[in-house]
Length: 498
Image (cartoon, rainbow, N blue to C red; front, side):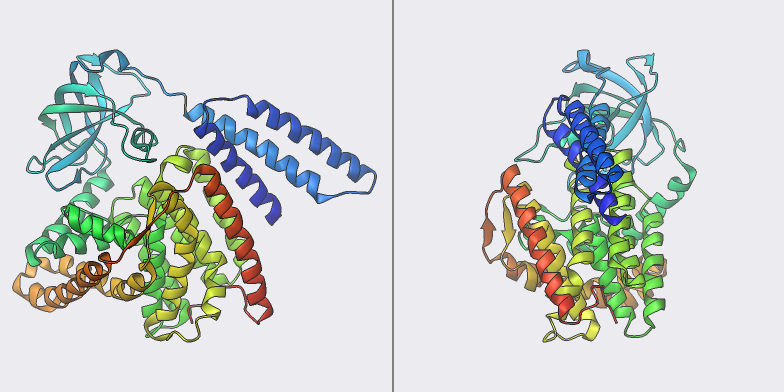
């Protein structure tokens, strides 16, 4: 059953990927035809009692490939209701449907329009976004009227397809040079309207207690809010390959979850530590507003934790592929146009398949404070995401592993102290004295490590799409033989945090 689940999911994702890359639909019927022929051949072999699994597996792959192509094709059929107004000044009223994202000098606001130039809109309605100065405050659920010039999102740099990145969330237009007026408030989901202000209160407490960039780094690590980190620090975090500590992806959530559990195991039993780790992820999802990105990332992290709890790598791998299948079925555009989803999937797969075997070969690394498990998790996840990072960014840090090993053990403590600082921030001096000082020391340490390692060179290399496929084929062969040899040496093939 596991082979068929993997085959079906892989074929479905492959069909989505190919249709997303090439604007043609001709291979879907061909895939169905070849799959049907192979399925009939497999049935013929079964009737003659010479059954073979190989034709059936290929048939399932080809049929699911065709289904993935069909699903992607339907998702890529965008309507363009405002296309005739590009470059013109328009008036739009709508509701803010996401928590506004603050940058250094501007805030990006996404709205779902109700009217366009005085005309009431019918479903489906495309989302729009606009940018305002950071001092102009808007909130989730606000109803606003916006006047400005209608544009399409810019193309972005390198291989990053910014328009499609936005399109996966139904955002197709930008309003430039906006003049915004608030009409009313409280038009959003009541639960989210409670959660987002709570998150903002936490961030305000942190900003009052800590200087910059410590405050933004603290908020980024705890809540995934990059905020005014500044170009220099952001680039340093990226060059050292630790940007994941302030990014809401499974790459981040999984590593942090493993780190938290490693610390909890110093004081609690394995079952209790894993249970608290899972509960903390669920609470984290609710706390940051349960957006699609964090839900996907946290789902991946929970699957990895289940693998640790039940010691059944094959079952958890199947669960991962089933989860990814349903995510892609719901929104096919995330497969190629959502870096967070891609990193989440690859990091979780690396943690499940490779981390246990690597851990067996790190006996020379201390197991205190979960250092060995963090090292194994870091190695396995970075090995799995390395080809993708080279494909998308063209560079990777040569000192990524030591930088992560020095920084990641501090992350659970930073998260805990940041949380307490946010909760008890209203107590003023008491909160500052109890939590802000040790938190500031830890953040200063992280900033120091980042600054030191940012001075080291990065590996500049670029992978083509074919090179990316070849790299992951080589990685699959390596993982197969490496884990096979580890099992022969007595490994259980499970992720161990005990």
